[in-house]
Amino acid sequence: MQRKIKLPHKVFLANLPTPIHRLDRLSETFGVDVFIKRDDMTGGVETGNKIRKLEFIVADALRKGYDTIVTCGGADSNHCRATAVACARYGLHAVLLLRKPTADITGNLVLDKLVGADVRFFEPEVYYSQLANIKDEVLTELDRKGKKGYWVPVGASIPLGAVGYVGCAAEVADFEKKNKMSFDVIFFATGSGGTAGGLLVGSKVFDLKARIVGVNTGEDASELRRTTLEVARGCAAIIGSPVSFKSKDVIILNGYDAGGYGLVDENVVKTILRFAREEGIVLDPVYTAKAAAGMVGEMEKGKIRKGKKVLFIHTGGVFGLFAHRRLLLGEGD
Image (cartoon, rainbow, N blue to C red):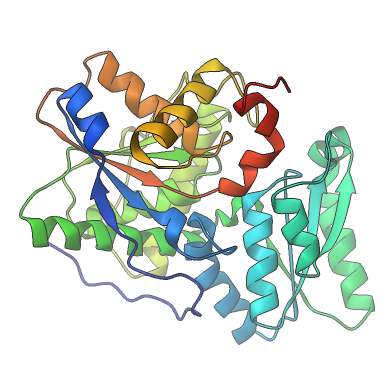
């Protein structure tokens, strides 16, 4: 039974609902009905899962009178690119605190600069050890200049942002109802817990029967589980839902992260090429290819029985492809 909820105000950024369709070749290969939800089609340069989250975060910043959003991430961060574009769209300034790139500026970084974001680079060791202090210094600097900075943690993975994926779960429930079917498993990439937290809340609110499986893209699994639970509980409180969670509710699939965040191995490359050439679906090497590899791996191992229905949520990130173009095209890296 679906529960009544109250969603906070949001701005328009994403083209919703995103479509769901069957992946025919994969389905035939494994004897499993494999579907994909195209959150890579939420927009153009504002594509991907972060846009669902930013609809609520940008609305909150505007409502409270902030003029600048400050956030952080890797040099080729999808979240930071989405934030920069969203800020430009709604007349906000974006300050991006990024780990210093180790290669040429490409993909998301080009778009960050194109839309006018204030991009600040930090050596990785400084970024990881001093981010809290850096953030405070930037917010103080903005205050001195008469500006008001709104802090958004990595990945927009906060309870308010996770509300966006409660909406995604609602779209899945609507698809199931219209097509008189239910998914058995939902796979997606998880790195900071926001998408997972929102889907976990939404699955209970809208009574989805599927197991919600986040494929770890390179983070500490215990910390990721803790963050996901924290985000889910906060998200449920925001929408006024009485649903509750236990640690066992957070399912994290490990073993497909290529050795760590942002790293690429042969299986990641193979998965990208397979989806592109068999289904016309373009994955990114940091998130979605690892999640897809996890889903395929579970089917190859027989952990998903024939005839079951599986949904893969494509969370975007195509701009991250270009930093690895040589490796993907067989030219070395």
